[in-house]
Structures are given as structure tokens and as C-alpha cells.
Image (cartoon, rainbow, N blue to C red; front, side, top):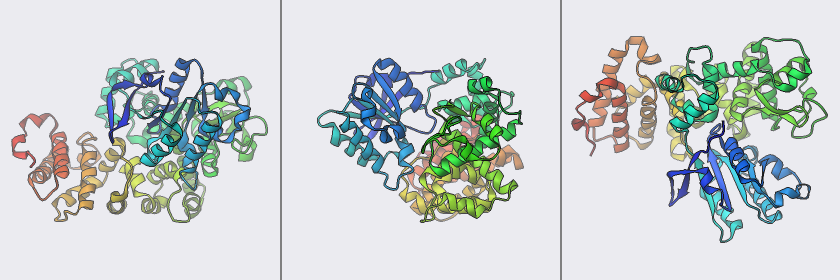
Length: 505
């Protein structure tokens, strides 16, 4: 489903929306399009390139590596270069990929161009200044895809065959999965995950179900080849995970199902193992592309989930030493390598044997982009302690789904203790504010509320939160988020809250 997406533009040191669409920038000399994983950057480029009439879409990896003399069409068409982040995450110097891109643009005579990048991989003012250095007096635009509007989400659901899109969206909200209806990839994933009629329990269950559905669907190349014997869906998913893990750990982009392959897209026989099973996995809808030019994961987010699922299976069922997996993923500084961060976030949620070490390495990533609802009390405390130390240096923003998952676990009880404690340090209050934001994203009476009964738990929360709202020793933002959480906790009784008693200074 191709939708003309709305965007915000970075102007005057802030994001300004003004209900503008990406199509409004078709006459622009150049722009950079930012967005979260799966937000629809590639699809948006497909829409715009078709509307342009004289455009070329090229992956950033190929654009950097191919010789410009071999692609004369790049000189006279609008270039849609997709995925700067996929180059940046694997580079030692994060400035080098953008430098290489701009060098190519100058070699081509400065054609019109559009560049996409994950928002977390764009280096802010530094990147913008580098871009301006090759633009001369001409203006480039820094844009960010807005979340899907309800109308856009409904249009996609109708296109996917969902009979009651409004009811579907209400169900997602009731299950605390709002973020899945704001992101095209996650929306399609969620739609595939609820084919059975029941709603999944959290992000892992959602991706688990969706990947299972995609594993059942064979591509046209497999239907034509009719090779390989049938395997169970679970085996196909694990085989897909093995292929994704090998690609991500080796820094490759895909597999050549036929032919010798190349450095970026090795031949499938290099994966060894059961070739028949691997071919079937590669031919499912978990991957895209052709057998000749290369099959790659349908989306990086799906590839990262599948890779983590395989590594978890290898550790728990195949006796793969956890320390070896960590050695593959951690750099010499003991931190998770940037291009494997997505895998580490999923793996930490799945596997308790590596979880502690991954929490120590990247508490921001696990809290902001993970599924921490499965963590134990001690693991959650370790995560929050790590957050407290790292938050003053953060350069990214948490996803709503991740904060909701975090607060759905033991963090809720830890939060009550933090709210009753005397510590009012800025770092402690930043952690409190994040947890309070997460509380506003989960249906009350969920995993933690169900244990002692939602009503009793809500009454306890109401007293604690009301005390924070009234307490001037908490900073204004902490009290604001406590009020937001309080309103969420009381739900339908919000009209009976004496809001006047809670007005902040």
C-alpha cells in the first residue's frame, strides 16, 4: 500500500510539521529523510520516485561501492539513495559514509538527490553542516516521517484485507500496542500476527506470530523451482534466523541463491548446513529480492529478530557457549557494536544467559528499544541503575512500546519505591520520568496489576502518584508525568480526580 506520508521539517532548532506531505518537497534540490526502523522510508521513496518520472532508487551500500562511470543514468536523474544508516553502523568512523556519499554526488555533477537514514544514525548538526558544504547557496531539507495517522493506518489495513480496520486499531490500543499502528512495518506485522483472532502478548509474541505467518508464504521463485522437501514452520523460521545471523555478524546484505555471489552477497552454499532447508527459508516472504541478484531480509528489524531467535536457540538447545556469542557482538571497548545493536536488544529479551552482560553494555538500547517486560527483579534493577548512569549522555529517544514493556515488568514496583525514597537527584528523576511515561502506555491491570487485583493495585498507585504531584521537591517534569500517569491509572474515573489540587507550580 503506497501512502503519501506526512513529514516534519527541522527548522529553527525544532521539528515543525504544519501538515506537510513528502510530495510537497518534490521540487526540492535535495533532502534527507529520517525515520525509525520500519517507519516506511523505503516505501516513501518508491512513491516519490514513481511520481518523479526521472528517478533512480539505489541502496546506499551499492551507491558507495559502484563506480560512477558504470551508471551514467545517475548523472541525469533524481537519486533516491536509501539506507545511509546501514553503512554507518558498520563503519569505524561514523563520518566516513556521509563523506563518501557526498563525494559521489560531486563526482556525478551534483544531481538532485534524496537520502534516507535511521533517525538514531543521523549525527545532527555535524551531518547537516557537511551536507550544506556541497550545496553552495542551494537549500537542502532535513525531514522526518511522522507516525501513521489513523486514516493512513486504516487504508493500509484495508489493503491487507482486514475487514474491520477501526475495530482492529481499537484492539491494538486496548492491548497497549499503539506503536504498532503508527509504523507501517509494525502495522503489517501486527495484522499478520492476529490472523488467528487472538492478540499477541507483547513485541516478541507479535514478531513471533508474524514471522510464522511469513514463513508459510513461499515466493514465486520457490513455487516455480519446487525443490526441497517440506519442513515445519518452526524449522523454517530457525533456518531463516541462521541466515540472518550470518549476514549481520559478517556485515553482508544478502544471499545469492543461485550463482557464485559476490563479497556483499555470498553464495548460499557458503552457509553450509542443510541446503534444502535454507533454500526454502530463503524463498519465504521473510526475504525479498531475486534468486540471481540476491535475497535479503524483508526488513532489517525482521532480520534482527530472526537472528536473535536463532542465537537464543543455539545457546539454549545447541550448547553454543554464551561467551562466544558475546565475543561476536561486543567490541574491544566492551560495548555492543552499533550494527548489532538491534540483535542484542532482541537477544537480551529472549536469553537470560547473556542478558546481564548486554544490560551492562547497552542499558539505553535495551530500555529504549527492547522488550524488558521479561526481565527479573534483579535484572530490571541492573537496567535502571545503568540507565541512571547513562541518561545524561543519551542522544536518542525511547519508543513507546519499549517503555510500556519495561513498566509492565518488575520496574513498576521499583518505581513505587523510587517515588517514596528521598533521592531527588536529576539522574534519578530522569529515570522516574521515563517510567512514568511508560505507565501511560500500558492498559492498567496488566501483568503487574493482575497479581493482587487491579482495583487494589490502582488504589495504591493513586496514592503514590498523587503524593508526587503535590510534592514540590520533585521537579516540574516529574510531577507532570506523575499527573499523566495518575489520570491513566484511574481511567474512567478521571472526571472525579480533583485536578485543581494537583496544579503544578
